[in-house]
Length: 223
Image (cartoon, rainbow, N blue to C red):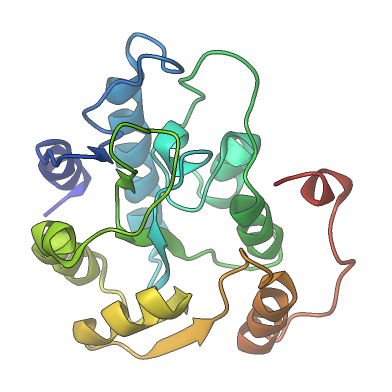
């Protein structure tokens, strides 16, 4: 397994009411070559993760319509694309949508913590695509067990390939799923739905971080 074969395998998956950012084109927001560019971004990001020797994964649930659906990167919105290369040297990522930069609250919280770490983790999701309600692509829903089964082996391959030895689950869905990979799983509250304070406290505890200001100005404006 390597970055190219992994991304190729992801791009081959098609499911109803699921947007695959590495294969699908959004007719409303995407540039003409968006899917190809997201594949390139993910390959580059995974190669950078491998070069860093990252052995920790932060695992969320799935891609959201304001974040990973657009960027193709887990827990990362367009607001933070310019920060990726600084934390993951060699990663080459780009905005591939039309119109203004779109920010996401969860990504803002994630990247606020990442900036305090000496070695960043691999950012990933239990379900690496964007599941949405039928006929309404700009909604978020939880994936089904059947949908998840399609990516089980790919997730296991990713963990084996990169030699992941620690899993930090962001939310209970990820905590339950991550237990199958044989690495220690630690869980923090997901920052959405009123969980911001508990998420920050959990990350401070796990990484022994100093307390910082609650949020930047742009974070407080997100929804």
